[in-house]
Image 1: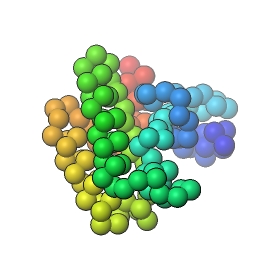
Image 2: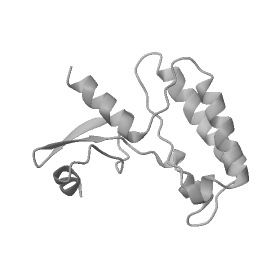
Image 3: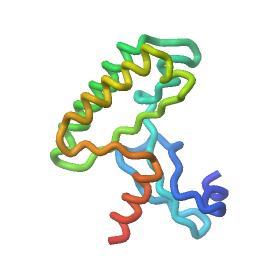
Length: 130
């Protein structure tokens, strides 16, 4: 799969769960930025499959706990928190209210940047090429 992504000009992938920061993979002569995913911030695994494991309120607590630790650690070294949200889940009223509350809380902290995976990949590639 990574070889095909590289051959077709994709800049990033987000399938691996093995690190806290992006990193560059060299596959078949192509560079791809891996933006690591995180199961604890993946809405589908908590709200949907194989069956719901909790409420939007509980997911808010998980995301907030994760964010608080990463934010504290970011005083020493950069950190990345990826949220994987699926419209058929997160767009439900309670889940959407939870997402809005979480983003409001996170963005109230100095130095927090929200970005798409593409923006993160361009930023990381630029940082690594300096």
